[in-house]
Length: 203
Figure 1 (cartoon, helix red, strand yellow):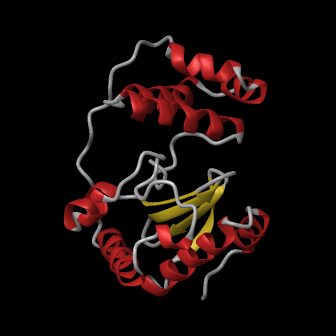
Figure 2 (cartoon, one colour):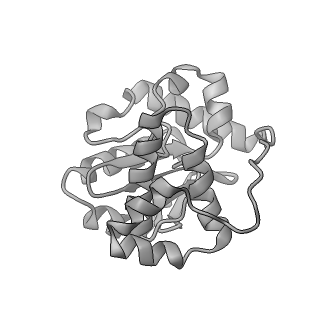
């Protein structure tokens, strides 16, 4: 692999035992599918760029996530991705083993597709944002979950209004109770770890 960043080596080395093989696999496939890709840390997690942000990955206590920056366009051109989408703010759900990733052939096809979209300058259509009042109010279920973690509550209080809004929108847009509960749990986990909601491969 070329154009590697030592920060990514450190990030992988510091990740949990289960996560390292997943992160290494993703990294290898992204570089194979797009040899000119460059990597760095964005929002505290590994990010890959080629004519703009291409995709990214991250690891947490019990799972990893991976996704493409222009996820809507990738899913539009390759529907099987949408069918496998998860609820962990990630296109591919919660990754706990290498087997949770798409096949090598599919991953390479997706990376090449995403790279071509960036090279061609194709932009996703603008998505209307939910209108929220200027005073950002967390829903009751998120506040209740935050009370169970002093670290998460302190980190949430330190977020800017726009950063809080990103989490609130993601939670309140859930259409099912089960989905909403999962999103609340994931949000608390992310907030406690100092993550902001707006890193796209982790939508």
